[in-house]
Image 1 (spheres, one colour):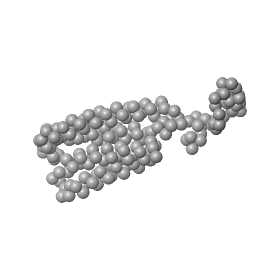
Image 2 (cartoon, rainbow, N blue to C red):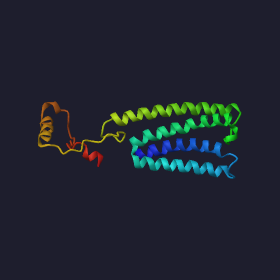
Image 3 (cartoon, rainbow, N blue to C red):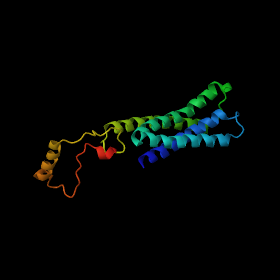
Image 4 (cartoon, helix red, strand yellow):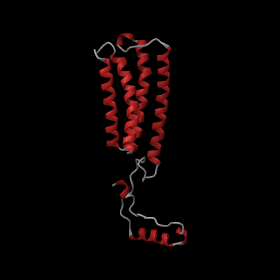
Length: 177
């Protein structure tokens, strides 16, 4: 579910950004601009969903957030290119609304880059039993002494408030299987 959440949410954002940018670049170069825009959106969206399932939620969350930042940043860059070099082909709007969209897109790019950095920290430093962690569990077999230590702790007064719990001493192997 976590991979689906990352893929769908960030896939939508990436798909929208790249669909809008592709519309600007393809304007006047293709006959059916709407069909091309839809194809770009769906290709990026489904690509992001597949990527999230292949990479896992923690890693894909970081990487797709950076792709979303690039997608958002590509909007004002495309507008700047259209104004600076109109012969290259991107369509440039001269109204204040388009400038507002570019400003919002630039702010969104900064937000997605910050989100990617924060997600990377969480994936690297988070608990290994979380779907949001990119760290691997130790996966080593517990020694008899390690198991005895857990049993001794659970039998002691220190564990007097631990009731009806399953305690697995496997180095996290079950969580990552």
